[in-house]
Image 1 (cartoon, rainbow, N blue to C red):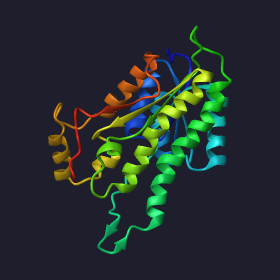
Image 2 (cartoon, rainbow, N blue to C red):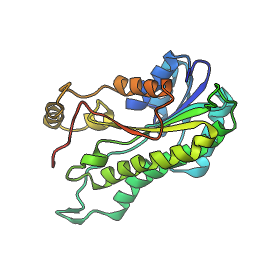
Image 3 (cartoon, helix red, strand yellow):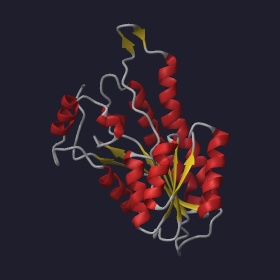
Length: 254
């Protein structure tokens, strides 16, 4: 897909992977709406790419619907949705103070899984009504963000790993269902990337993760994630698949 002149929506687009993807899509000629709960950073990101910032809680059905409609009014029907909104809590199922509070697990599932599905269902409706872009009948592409933790979840990652596993499992049925509308659905499973979430870890922990990555032995950059999003847009046979982007990393026990 050639995104030039077309609309894209980035959920969780204010920083990290989402912001890098917003920049890449803009550089390719796309008209980008940055959706996020952090409006201060979202406005900064949108201003830097001549896009628009829209406040959006991905877990709220009515609020997300209103945010998407605002993006459609500004830029037209979205041809690309990239779901980057998410959290990465670290908490053991049974800790020193007892069982993990159920609300902590539910919050992770609600933001990472329900939020992703909410955006997918709402944006796909607008995509399905747009004109086809080519002889194959393509109308749009949706890219969700899973994680290597879906396969290699470590100690303290029960909530996060299960949320990312759900996103991975969503990929194929969503792609099959939306195929009739010419909409492709993919998921990227990043390894350890330079994001605000990871930068919150102690420096020794970051160094350990770098060393655990066979090659290149460093953290991935948000630009490398964004680059792969662009690769997905450019190759129509990429559909219904979860692709690890991890430098051959396999997370250890923890």
